[in-house]
Length: 440
Image (cartoon, rainbow, N blue to C red; front, side):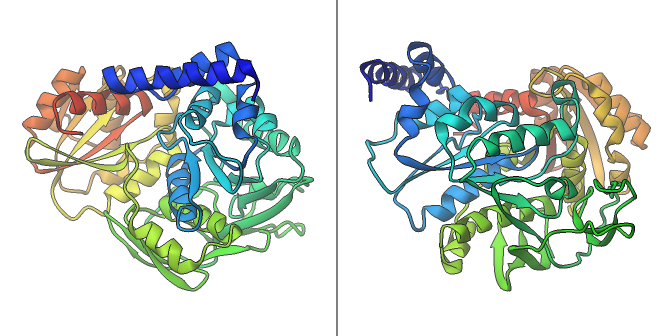
């Protein structure tokens, strides 16, 4: 490591120490300061690691956590950006406090799709995991094809790296790439109440794709009746889904039964991606089962918060596909509950709120929802969406600001609360709960 890199690393470590000691911490500032001293620091920090990059629209954070937990069953030296700080400065931050390593070390890194081009040459990944691509912040990316371009261009910078991709997504099988590819997906039909099936066109001939079975959105065992385009052969498979509950799921991967304390079909995909990475690195199935059972919920992803004698299940949402999957999860609730929906439209959330038009809040109107609370910068827009979905306006409290949302939660008529929040709203409500001592 050069003198400049050594100074940069030391500055970053001191910044992290001060943040940890005197504030609630910070995951990106240490990396930002270190990079201001040495812009090439990341390459020096990563050179002794086999790097796994996890990217895609939805599921990156949980897949990163599960992959880290699985690989920890076999490998001792693993670092990760578990907090989800997935741009370059956050990735540098993940390396700053790592012990000095010379061999047999892994780095499991969540990377924002737009940041791949800024880090891939320095990281030189051994494995890319592509979770999915759905319409998301199109004011930032333009189209799903543009997002896929970012993923493919980055992978081709490291031609010896393997791509481990969601084989159920037609887009991931639409182009020939130079990298070795392996695929994971569902090799079973599921009993789902999902009504979000999306039409997709064959990338070869433009005809509508058909499905032997599908899971949600445009994911499934697709084929084209007009040409030879079809789902690729799967290397890692979900072979059965036996239980879907509001708190957990039980399913089979390549014939073995696993339980995950994160609910929803979309999280089985995340578990499958992590399982596939584990098998790629020769982790035994029994070890993967232990990793799943011992997994703790990632903040904002089905996070359970106990406050004011209420059980709050918090889910971050950011696009129609992800929100609709969370709504399917809420539909599994058997008890009366209060719904809290927090909507911000800052750049990190997506400025354009038209995406709400493609969500399925209508599917909740038959549930036993005693009260709905809306909040955030765009609380009025959220209220309007619930009313157009068929919610009774008299049962909706447009709380707006954070203090009013907290008060509404305190006086909610049920002990069970399902909270949906866009990214920055999730961070804000969590900070409020931390300050009040409800989150340690």
